Structures are given as structure tokens and as C-alpha cells.
Length: 332
Image 1 (cartoon, rainbow, N blue to C red):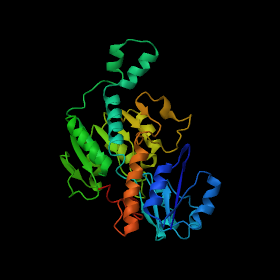
Image 2 (tube, helix red, strand yellow):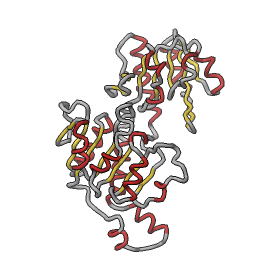
Image 3 (cartoon, rainbow, N blue to C red):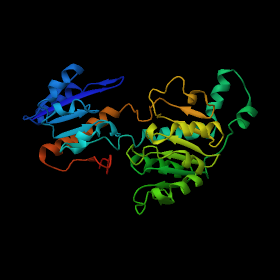
Image 4 (cartoon, one colour):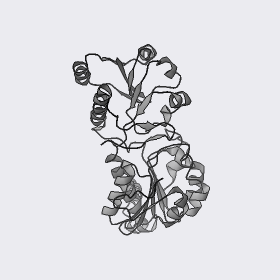
């Protein structure tokens, strides 16, 4: 049995530590492990691979992996893996859902507090060496989050922890999920997608924490922006394609939304000519909400547990429903 590991995604390159590889080889003598550092060697490595560990296998390379049985994605978002051949195949796909359940909710509240307390406005004043309290208070405003209404769209590990933090800040929290009969700790109400517009109209802060699927692509468009309060803030740590970006820009430009905190955009990197860069009510971070110094260590712990399960015939964790587009449960 052969395991191929390959980590290359845009500017991110990483290698499995040698001690981990040695540990796997020692624990499973029947397992051959090949860590691929050179992209050019990947097609040949995949020919006889049974298992794959990495971000993804490109669609054009997937037919090469004729013996593949299981693939573990180091990412929680797996939309790039779900091309037709993969979805139709018998290959089991698992992901790393759950590893972002601390860092992304913390990032969300960094953006919420930045927008609520107008820290981004203060940063612009600091760059000008300007001490202007009245400008900061009146331009963009300063408000409290305690007592505000927080709508969380998505109830995975990230959404659940955003709800928990919101309650800790004294916010009123409501969550949208497919099965509204399943409660979310710290949420005063759980609603279904059919109640989306009512939820958006209630909220002061709206956090997008849904996976990107056929159902969620473009789910926040002109009608949804119209349903929101003009004093509301939108936080997107999901995927850029969940939002109609042109409609969002138009709404922000017209004052139909108080501001936005964006860690993701439709095109990444965000093009230099995008209006979003210069909008004073927009806070942009370059898709870093999922970063944590312990990410790869924790991802390997999850993978090693699943590897043990795979080798002993036990049920895997974080199995992705390839047609739904997400894993139905996070790490145990």
C-alpha cells in the first residue's frame, strides 16, 4: 500500500516532517510513504498511490491515480476537490474540518471589534499623525457590541464557536442551519435557510461561515443586501463566491451597509483595481483567518488518527459528503 504526500497550493509549500514519515513506516510495515517535493514528479507518484495527503489532486491529474482509495485534504474547504470525476468516484474524501474552530472565530471578532470601535479609522488617523476624536466618533462611528444582534450563517465548528463568543460578549445570537431543529449552544434561536431574509433584517452583525457549495454560491446577492439594515456589518470568512461582490460594492457605495470585514474575495489575490481597497468602511485581510502556528501539527494529528482507522478498518473522521460539498461532522 502506498501513501503519497504533496503540499503545494499557490504560494504555500510544506513538507511532512521526516519523523512523522518514519513513524508511519514503523507502525505500518506494509505502507510505502512518498513525500513529493518536486511538482513534476507528482504524476508518476500518483500512478500506484492508494492514499493521498495534501491540499488536493488537480482535476487533470486525478485520472492518473487509478488505484486511489482515500484522500485527506489538509484544508476544511474542499470545493476545489469536488470536480465531477472525483464526486462520481469511489474515492473516500476526508478533510480538516474542526482545525479552524479557534482561530477563525477569533479572527471574526477581531473584525467585529475593529468595525464596531472604528479601529480602521483610527489607523488612518495615526498614519496622518492626527489626533481627532470627533472625526473618529462621527466618521464611521463607535458602538458597543454588547446587546447587538449577531446572525451566524452556518453551524459547523466555526459557526458554533462564533456563536459562543458572541454570547460571551453579551450579544443576542441567532444561527442559520439546514436542520433548524438542532440547537446551537449559546444561540437564542436557530433558523432554516427559508428564514434568511428575516434573519438578515434582524441582525446588526452578519457572519458568513458556510461552506461553498452549489447552494451557497451567490447566496448573498442584491435581494439579501436589500433585506439588511443600513447600519449592519457583514463579515465573510467563508468563501468570496458566497457573496455577489458587485452587489456588495454597490450597497456599500450607496450607504446600504455600514461596513464589511472581508478575509475572502471573489478573486484572490484581490485585484489592485478593486474598489474594495479604498472603501473606508471595509476591513480587508488576505485570507489569513485560518492561519494558526499549530495548524500543520494539528492537521497531522487528525490525519494520523484517520490513518490508524483506515489501516484497522474503522470508520474515518470528517468524511465529506461529496454531493453535499462538506463533511457532516468535525473531529471527535
